[in-house]
Image 1: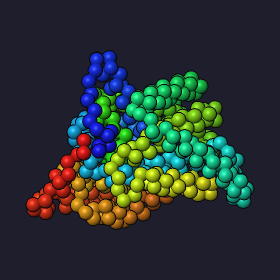
Image 2: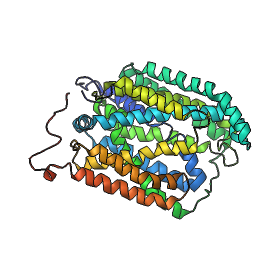
Image 3: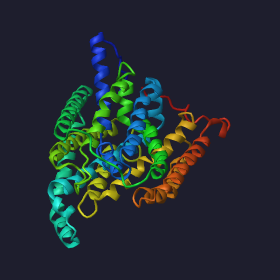
Image 4: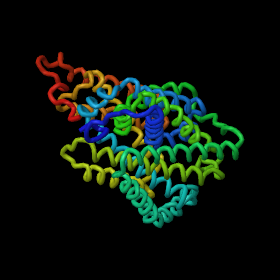
Length: 410
C-alpha cells in the first residue's frame, strides 16, 4: 500500500475537474503544513532576529515544500513512501504529539491562565498552574478527539476542509492588516552573526523534512498535476505572514491583544486539521511492530503530558522543534545519498546515536541563545546522514540492493 491510498487511482477528467483537483490538493498541502511551527516560530524568530529571521524561515520553508512536488514524481513518491514507511510513520507521530502539546501550552498560556504566565511570582504562577491542569488537559483531549474523528473521512472532505481553512486564514490576515495598518516593528535582540550561525540548520530542516510528510506524498500521488505544489506556495505564504503580522514586541505574550481571538481561532482550525490528517496517514501506512492505534495513542499521550501547565514552555516547544532540525533531516540526507533505497538494518540506531550527540549543541543554540553552537549541530547532521546513506548504497555491500527486493504494493 502506498502512502496516498489503498489501490491505484486513475487521474482523469475534464479540464475544470483537473484544475479543481490541482488547486484542491495544493490547498490541502498548504493547510497540512500550517502547523505549530509555521504559526508560532515566526514570533520567536522576530523576537530574536527581527525580520531577517522571519525571511530566513519563510524562504527555505516555501522552497522546500514547492520543490517536493517537482522533485518527486507520482511513482518516485510511491517508491520512497514504501521504502521509508517506518520513518514517515514516526514523522507523523511526532507531528501529532507536537500539535497536541501546542494545544495544551497555548490553552494554558493564552486562554485559561494569562495571569499565570504574566505573574512574576513563582508561587502564584504555580498555584494557578495546578488549578489549570484539568481544563488544559480537557482542551487537548477534546480537540484531539475531534481531529481523530475526522481521520476516517475521504480525500474530498479533506480538500474542502483545507479550502475552508485557507480561506478563513486569508480573511484573518485581511482583518489583521486592517486593524494594525502595517507590519509590526521587530528589530531582534541578537545580531546578524547569530542569524548566520542559525541559518544552516533552519534551511536544512525545511528543505529536508517535506520528504517525510505523509500528507505531501498523498497529494503528490493523487494530484493530476505537480503544479499543486505551486498552488501550495501561493496559499501557504499568507498563512506565515499572518503569524508574523500579529507579533507585538510590547506585549508579554508577544501577540497583539486586539488580534489574539483571531490567532486562537487560526491555531484551533489548523491544529485540528494537522492532527486529523496525520492520524489518517498513520492508519494507511504499512504496519510495523507498533500498530497504528498504539502509535497514535503514544503520540497523543506524549503531547498531552508535555502540554500540561508547569511542563509546557517555550524550551519544550524548541525541544520538539529539534526533531525537525536533526534526526528527520539526517534521515532524509541518508535516504538521498542511498539513492532512495531502503537504509541498511541498524541505520535507525545510528541516526539516534548521532542525534543524541548533536542534540546538546542544538539545545544550547536554540534555548540558551548560544547560537554559534548550531553550526556544529548542522555539520553533524549532514555528515552523519551522508555516512549512514553511503553505507546503504549497493556499492557499499556488493551484490545487495536494499531498495530492490520489495516493489511498491500499489
